[in-house]
Length: 557
Image (tube, rainbow, N blue to C red; front, side):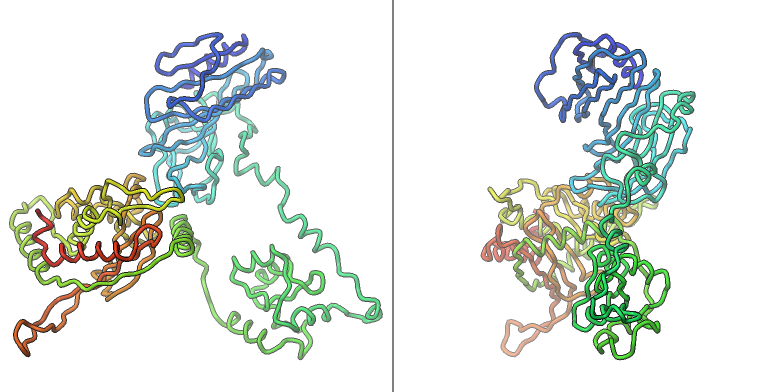
């Protein structure tokens, strides 16, 4: 692949319009670029014939054939060219951006941070599997990338050598498309890289080129407040502004100071401001953090200036020990999506008790059959109560398809596939893998799928196809935690989520007068998006679900 790009650059010096096809490996002269088609996308053309530079955007589709179109002019004897391209990543239909730099006949390929999910805008480098100078073949794992959903392996699509790693292990919040490493075709070309800088700016060079952002704040810090004429003779007028800002309930601070204080969990009331009129600036927060103790305890503030409310706020922060736990990509995205759900989706909740004695009896019988049929080499198989719930929910969705839908501004999209997402709690955060076509699968198959997906979720090895495409969610806090009843937050863009509580024994009236019988009941709560599912439709779905749970033989029909 890199050799083909060399030939493309060599013929470019003659100046013409060329079409490169990977399926035929032919070059055609004089053909203008055709309009966009499904074979390629994102075409962007640029040329700089006077400086000997040109650029090209391309992407690989899911098909094997791809076409590149570019227009080239006359180049100097030593051209410097850049080609922007896209590479396909393992187990994902998204793309990994990359670029090529040609100088003195050498090609340097920039490998960019790929987009691995529809919601991913940045990623973290969990671990590099290759070192600088290592040979790389097609299919080799370059590194592990932590996305907003899981940790995925990034494979190389071409052969070459890893010339330089631009982003080290543990680097966080790398924007999609930013170069993370450089590759060359031969080992001898590694030395020719020198101080080559990626077109998008690697992580290492960015701080040198870009000035620190808070310029306005720096100028504010360097400009001392002018003393009032009436207090010009006072030896130390600085406490007066502090009293004016602290005398009321409001504490003045710059936006950067507020942001830093919020990130570091610092109360502004415990920081002495040195900015204009006693306002708190970023430098005050940094000095407070470096000192390790609140400045409000120091002798700088005169007695009687701090009201009781301010002292009460500073006291608990000074006496409480705490640890800051960094938020993972998964937890940040989960928090953002759930907040969006509660702010934009009109939730309502429907609760129902289901009689599960027949279901528990059938479950015991099926597990006995599975136990007797297992061999020595196979692990034991057991069907859980949650497997029955997933199956019953899937069949109820097929009977009431209005609940298997999503809201858009122009229409309500009703899905024909019943893909049930299952909430799984892990040490990395809440994961929601998907049981595809749950309405068409048997209980044993659903049980195997859930165990496999839950294991991947806990080991943080879920692939995009494991958690994408869900149309309905089941969240069970009853079996593992004994929660009797709760209301779950809808997982957008879905319209419903079922919250499953624990089972409990109750005494219920019998058929005869004064007769009472024991019974086992399970409480479920359906959260609905009122834009998509009306109350009567939600109640209809719960009625269908209840009928399947209370007569579990119908689940196997």
